[in-house]
Amino acid sequence: MHILVVQNVTLEGPGLLGTAMINAGLDLDIRIMDQPDATIPYNLSNYKAMVVLGGPMNVYEEDDYPYLKQIGTLIKEAVVKRIPTLGICLGAQLIAKSLGAPVRRNRVKEIGWHKVRLTAASRHSPLFTGLPEEFITFQWHGDTFDLPSGSVHPAFSDACKNQAFSLGTYIHGLQFHPEVTAQMVAEWVEAYGDEIEEFGGAGASERLLAETTSKEQESKAAAEKFMANWLNIIAKSNPY
Image 1: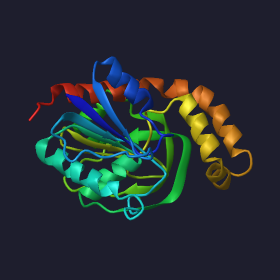
Image 2: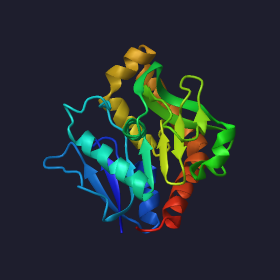
Image 3: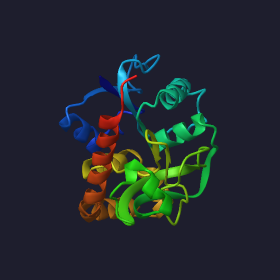
């Protein structure tokens, strides 16, 4: 069966996560939603799992991006049918919203490489199995989510309390980006450079690119563990 990957914009692909799933022999159906005639499946009957990636739009822009409503429908189906679902950044916010949790502006933006720390509840999330108590990962967001009812709170950062949630075994949201590569960061900096300069001041883009050279390697072990855990979650799921 296929893995549905909802890629909201061409610029923000599945990166390391996509590579890991392909290397594991999974067949990815990647829907790039800013491409002409892109569509979202009506249901998940042909899919073993779903990944919803990030993007520059917000969850409350459904009038401008009507397909976001269909993503919400698929998320609710995944919860009922216990289909493994992973949301990253915007994707996590869409899951939270679909499950009735508010999504709002965070008190500050997080852009760049930051430390994320685990909570005691992380031991109840299979996505966080074997992760160190503190790790470096990439961030690029201005919004945050409240925790969906019944979910656990595995991770936080100094700037954003809710860095992740897990609802049972199969539904997971990450505010951060374990999937990024140095090339992806460079492409985002080129496309969204004005936002970085506004956030970090003059020269912020160059500083971020320079920092990425070392931070990508520093984040590699944790990123690989996330990928392995996600693949394990998919492998243990039962097609309905």
